Amino acid sequence: MRNSLWLNGFGIAAVAAIGSSGVASAAASVIEQDGPYAVNTDISAGYYTTHNAAPDCQWARLGVDGVIIERGDGGNGTVTVRVPATDTTFATSHCGTWQIEGGSRQPTGPGTGSLGF
Image (cartoon, rainbow, N blue to C red; front, side):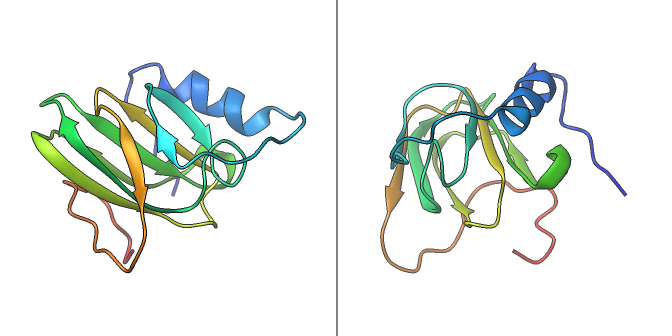
């Protein structure tokens, strides 16, 4: 069963990110702006934490064909999300700056469909 991403403009942007091709650059370990980010191309895989998530913070981990693997909404302060290398895209909105962290952290975000992750 396919899940649909909530209507925030992510659906179109995520499909554009998944369907785009181009020269890959070094993957970043900081996400400073809202939007979809291709995992292993735009951003590195790992545990990402934001310490300034707004109450309307929304994020999603996407797989092949834009299928939602996990998503979270709502936040007030610190949220941590695991973004594995097998994900296709990580999309974020109103969550502030995400920074990758080392070590074996546990996700703390308000997930709504973890599927065992």
